[in-house]
Image (tube, rainbow, N blue to C red):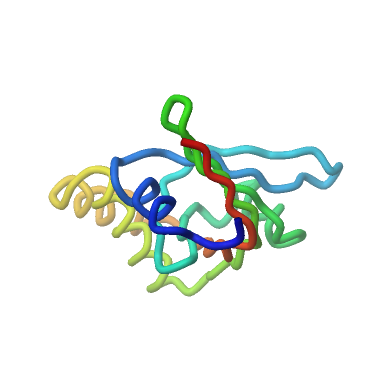
Length: 134
């Protein structure tokens, strides 16, 4: 399946879940990280600090995979990550994610007290292939 169906969209946007993303290390091995995410249209937005290993790996090789599970149900996505270093956009994205995962008040607090002091980068994953099992 190569598109985000309504069923996949509902799974990714409904109940709050974490994703595991994989990028490719220099030696070809996978590097996995648990992340917050938000589905935006047919792209998946994530955010991290600019000095993380996944950032370095995606700069070198943009191929990545993304998986969200709920027991025996899961969605796996293959695609390419585009890194966005624009400070205002990256800060707005991490604020949106903090609010999504922690609610308005706590998310705003995290954004102003912690994330605003960090050099952040947004990752926009272009969906190339989707596999869903439910």
